[in-house]
Every structure is written in structure tokens, then in C-alpha cells.
Length: 347
Ligand SMILES: [Zn+2]
Image (cartoon, rainbow, N blue to C red):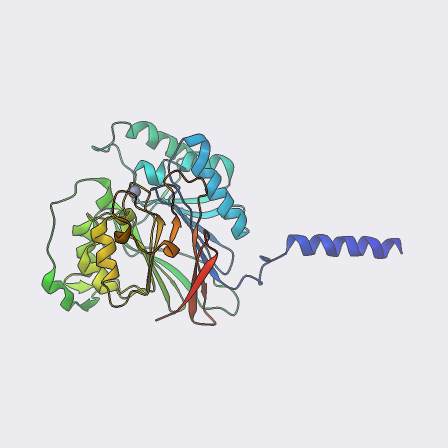
């Protein structure tokens, strides 16, 4: 009897530990848009349980962004970050890394390469020192064409992450000649670190997700003109929080996203031009905004059901989440504010 009780106890413990996310039970690729109030932090958890965090939000605010990333990790059933991809050295992307790394194990740090100074940030040296210390001085430089090796889950399609742009360079390759380039035009050269952003494609089976950090117009154009080096995508992370110095219209027309998710703040990004350009894409089925942009008329925002946070002073930090089911050849996007989901077929 006693032995039987002990056995039951062990089984119960194993059951609790392995609930939901036990190895082999996880069957989807999950993407969480952590609300970091106009910064960037995208958590990706693969079907094999590996985690990729793309940027870590802002520093300060009593650890607000680290709290929110940890909440997303908890929901995703993970307790460490396997790959921390930092797109570029702006405070709203890399400022939150030291605080997060103090709290959770981070295995690998990736960036576009070492930097000595940043013209647009006089406090760069202090932030950079904190970042290097968090990474214990061990970072991996990503170059266009590089891949981050990811495990394939048993019985599910392969998953790959390939860098398409970094440090103002774009991936070598032929791509396909792009007729959309007929209307392409360049903007003034951007000397800031935005133009050095790491841009990558995450592929899981036939699902394609493109995230370009804050990459700006002219480098975006190099990715699609004269040849389209990106291809078409299912999910597009609206670049640079939706600012109109990014989201080159020719790139949008070339990658033909089915769904776009914008990590704007109430007063940052979410430009009316970008929202309009996205909504005019024949391919686009849905555009989600992290926040309502309170600086433009309501009708220039998307409909409320596609906005995760409506109030300017919101502590709710509702997430937008995407879940990819390769077996069903579909992905589902959920607005956590309403709990409403919509499912889209993969291309
Ligand atoms: Zn940014």
C-alpha cells in the first residue's frame, strides 16, 4: 500500500511537471508580442521547445519590460532563453537585456557586431558596457546568410532561422527579378544604427516569418530590388514600430504578407502612411497593432478588435500571439485583450 502511494505521488509529480509543454507534446511554433510600450521584444518558442527572444525592450520603469518578458516566458512554459537576437543598439531594443539576463539564463547572445560609439546616443558607452557584461563578453556576430541552428521536433517539419540583412549588408543570392521595383525610390541615407538592424526569416515548414528590427527604407530596398531576396511571407513584423521611414512600400508589395503585426506604442510608430500602405496590400488579411496610435484619428488606426491595448495609460500589457500549426497548414493570431482568434491558411 505504502509503495503504491509513493508510486502515485511520483506519477503525479511527473504529470504536473510535464503538463502541456512536456517534450514531444508541444506541437506548434508560438510567437508572442510582448508589450514593451513602443520598444521591441518578440518571443519565439519552437515546437522542439527552443526559445528565441528578439530584442528585450527598454531598461528602467522598475524592470517593467523584464517583468513582461518573464510573464510571456511563463505562459510559453520556458525558463531560459536559448537565443537572444539583438537587432541593433537602440535603447528600446537592447536596453532591457541586462535586467533580463540578471533574472533568467540566456545561452547565446547575437548582434550585428561590436560597436565603439553611436553618434545618435551620447550614453551609448554605458549601455554597451552593461550589455557586454550581461553577455559575459561573449557574443556572436550575425552576418547576412548566417543561420541559427534550431532543433527539429520529431515528426514535424524542419525549422530554420536565416539572417537576410545585418550591418547595412544584405544576403547574397539571386532571388527573383522584381517588377514592383519599377516604382521604387530611395530616401535620404540613414546613418543611424537602424540601418544596421539584423533582419531575418524564420521558416517552419511552409510558414515564413520576417522580422527586420528597425531596418530603414534604403536597406529594405536592397532586399527586394532589383531582385526579391526575401520571397513572400505569411507573417510580417511591421518594421520599426510602423514608422514611415521604414516599411518601404516596394518591400511590402514584394513580400505580400498575409498578416502583419505592429509593435507600436500609443505615441510611437504606427504611422498613418504605414497603416494605409499595409491595408492597401491585396495579400493582407489582417493587421494588428500593439497599441492604438492616439496621435492620429481613430479611423486611421485599424479596427479596435485588432488592437491589443486601447488606452494610452494602460498597464494591461495585452499581447498579440501567433501560433503555427504545420499539420493543419495554418496559423492563428490571438488578441489577448479580447481573447478573439483568427486563423489563416499558410501560403
Ligand atoms: Zn525601435
